[in-house]
Image 1: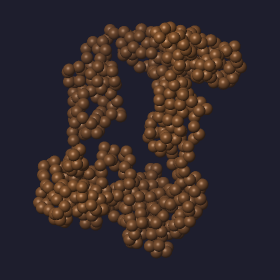
Image 2: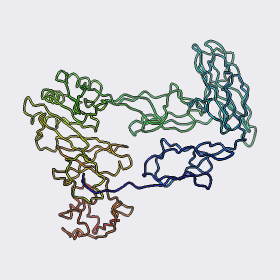
Image 3: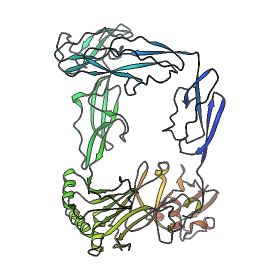
Image 4: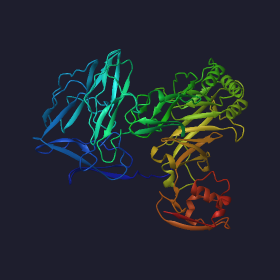
Length: 591
């Protein structure tokens, strides 16, 4: 594809030991650096790479993109240094700590014991998420934590010390009693007993049988300092539940260190989606939040969903084309989608080992889809998923295809990345340094003999196309319709920008190019060109209909309106003149 060269920005990663540079490497911006071989130093043992000079945070080579010139620090420990490894048995029998020479290994101790529990291993963290590898070298002091699995027919008694010293939980057989633990301590307070409620009203009787999981809360009395000797009210927090960026429920008065239990809200409903639970991150990438999750601060959690996909069974492709079988009952699939609350039926051919960029639809199934969806009150589209991306055909587009295609003719709908294809037209209409990074897709609806389908010209007959893009500029790309000669004709409406995808709408077959928007609004409203060498300035007023654009000869503009639209890439400005009535003069600074 034409458009000139243009390499990625290079950054330098330096590997250092204190103030001494060990090596350096130049890499592309937003790429990952490869971990080098471990350096050596006489009298020392290499202990890893760190992102800070104090060597407190290990550098994550697998998940850290390089966005600026970076130093990565080598950590060394002396050969004769000794470290202490401690064992926290979490209420089990005690295990003596070990003193280990640098570079040697921890001796795995005999398994501890704990009543009504089975020992489940040693872990690196108190949350018990990372098992410890006893074959690894010891290069610092640390604590290992015992994990336990409760035996069947047992219950857990948890102790919330309300800011006091930690008290291990107990596992108690059904019908037996919890053992009263040693009193916790808290600076400035006297312990006043264990209570079965967070409000500290009912004192717990350790002679009572345990027949359910329970949490006991510590009560404290101030030793003075103006507190009047009264009981200490435990800290409470609020948990907010959000669904689709709106507050779904709020639960207040949750005592620090306790869980919600039966106070959890009823699961939300979202038509066409399956509820997967609550999550601490809005994108579902955080930790699950359940009725047993301990609350230690005001917390917001988010509903996590998975689309309920009603799938048209795909055929195994022999080349890059999969097909919809004539034996599939489309009406039945639409009915299933309605029952599930889905708004689409999907043909998913994205998971085949053999890449699929085209889908063949027999004429009989085109007609069946149109009839079934036209009569549905909820299903309004068909989704076609290929290796290259996703095409959603609206009900109006299905009707357009159904009425246009001659009977007994099958069609092939395809979405192909043709950026490097030899027959892709040479792009024009913007400077080469912008077009050099453009990505080109060919979206086509053709008869199975290769002849394009001439669709009826209607703006309501829409396709929605989703394609992958670099996550580095997902928020700043624009999509252009390209004619057969390669000229960028008009920009498409982008309806969604994901982390690494973009979705745009269109009404017809064509080439489409995705380019990074070369201009952005600066804080003072001046448009700034941010990726083209050179600096130019021009001032236009609304009275000018065809200004001097000699400095912009690569833009091939014919009118003031086109100039502004091309420079801003703002296709949604249906009337630029009206939009700019607030500004008499426009200053364009290209730098």
